[in-house]
Image 1 (cartoon, rainbow, N blue to C red):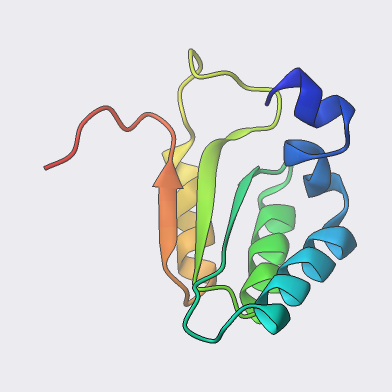
Image 2 (image 1 turned 180 degrees about the vertical axis):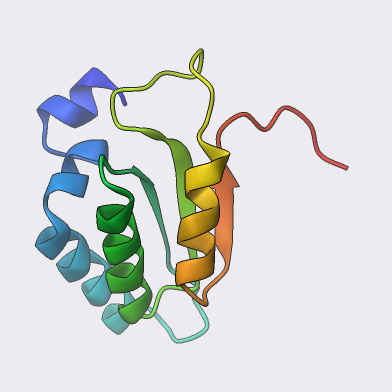
Length: 107
């Protein structure tokens, strides 16, 4: 997370305010054309159940996909991603998940 984002209450700091995330995503979905996809990106929260609850709440806003950075808020790229915890999020929602963290190549 970038200092300017965190200090301004943006980025990963929003993860501490799920009601604001809900309002932002709902407002975007309501005001953009139906064919315009809306996505959201989160990081893992301290408790897996909190991450799952957040993912389910975001899914209910009507987003097209959810990006999940498989690291906790304070972790940096030099620390390995937690793919085991990402699996739990993927299985808890029905919308597409865009995995993020420790992806170094693509087919």
